Image (cartoon, rainbow, N blue to C red; front, top):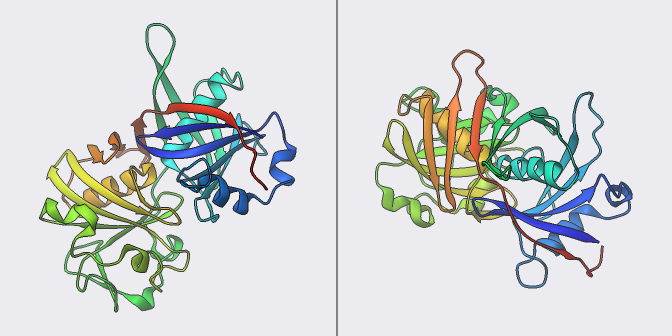
Length: 294
């Protein structure tokens, strides 16, 4: 099967065109295919697999299905959806603007920016409103307790001792820990085993883990452990979650630049609509033909 390798700030995925070949969605063991293709030694190498499919929701241009490198299916991917929009525009001939992509959290709109020659430059995704109700994120209240700052909690028997966490869902669950020393970003120093945090009993659907250092009210540095993928160069939904958590805990303004290992994302949490808008690049790396098994 043909594939395209794309990334948003180094958060890389293998993309398959199931619009042109709809049977691709039904004829393959997609979790197994994601694990095989994502393998960085025996496969193509990626943080996961994204299928671009025919939509089933009214008004959507395409539908996105996203599988992590471990084969688990996720509801959303902020960096991945920007690449889906570029793929839809350049390879599927979608001309509507904004491009409307059906995801696990509904149909999202992506506004594309182009240079003077009409080439793709960046995309802004309307990520919708963040979900803050613990039972919807979801968080199991039996395993957390409120901390001294509003919107922060500590974990019962969790890695990292008494660290404070803010919980946000952007269609997928996120835990955010703000640190005072930027040295703690590297390798989550003093935070604890991120795989244990991902699978802590407080998180019935596992969780994406982020450590952030606020450099100014409009800027923060972030490191991410993605559920099902491990440490990644960037996480779009995670950057949005950090920005929301920064506002909720009084650390950050509603417009901010989030610096990740792969580059920068611009995030704005609109006070009127409560929607989060995320702007960043989407890059195509190469295309090829997969010869591996299903």
